Image (cartoon, rainbow, N blue to C red):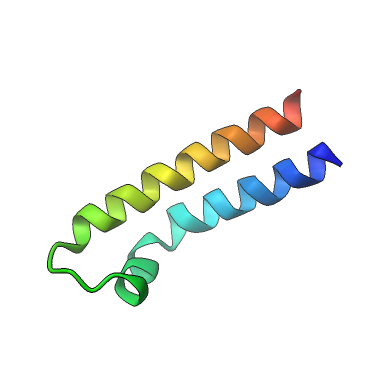
Length: 57
């Protein structure tokens, strides 16, 4: 069960990293979108690492 949750977390993290710019354009409406993209990519990377650790442990 923990592995399935880990796979879902990794998938969400990869989706955030891959689609950061379109997600930022839809959700946020501030001038500097590069900061939002950078933040989403960092969050996506961290989710991927956490999900990967859940799969391994």
